[in-house]
Length: 359
Ligand code: SAH
Image (cartoon, rainbow, N blue to C red):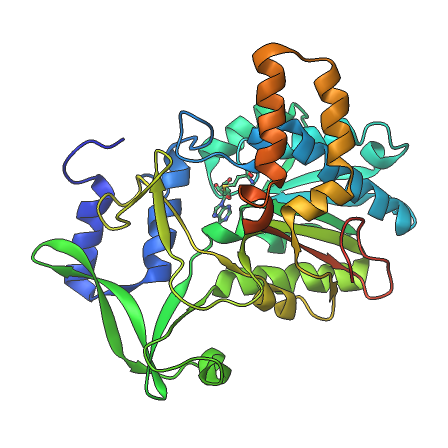
């Protein structure tokens, strides 16, 4: 990482754009993250202190334990359907699912009824997930469409932020799309000609000339698929990510080695994300019911992370205890991940919302 000069992807992109014209931000993100040979997730394990960023399940086992209890309680509340699909979107290293499975072992019938399914685009990460979870009956999918029909209990942590977005800037009553083009043999941002996508018609009401809005088409399609399954077959989805109820402005960012970098300088070498527009996901998930968007810190405290943190701390001392308490603060403190990260729950209209979340 960080080596000077052009990566294979950089050269590919410049050639492609020179031949066929500027590409959308969504094309750029999809290529940089998921290109099978040079893509960011396809070629590395980016998580942890030696990697580019640290996610909640990698910070502490408590995150997965409490999500597991939330899933198991809502499974009880919905009459313990068996079998059911226990699915995760973008499982990274597989740590979250391993913690969920461990924490729910005490719930009679849950593990036996659960069929574990992962939606993961990176074959490098699939191998790591298999090792971490250590079950030989995991089924992997490239898209949610191939998940079997059955009640669905699903988690997605920092998955939706990695899905490709398109950006549009308002010019009077029309929009111009932000694109990636080539200028003087390097990649450069530009604006396309005026367009009028139907999805943006109502954004004329809450924007002004010059404002930028983001649309995540794949995210909305996935939320629609999950919502349809849960509404018709039962289940729950817990979507955890950074973002807000309503999106406005440019949230596209590139991170490498825990610091922001220029997203165009080394395509494929940095993580690319955008904030999640939870309102768009909730709307797309209809006719499924959705909970209020809840800060991660509030959600974890309601599920009892304080008591769990204390119980674990009793068996620790010295630096291990300090690290454990720091991890607890990192997950819950509003100044750390507690407020930036939010949780949205999806559930059938006829069921009670999953614990820790309000209707
Ligand atoms: N949930 C994990 C990892 C988050 S990183 C954690 O919290 O640690 C994003 C994950 O989503 C990675 O596993 C990445 O390979 C996967 N991913 C990103 N875009 C994807 C896509 N379009 N299809 C399938 N998986 C994708």
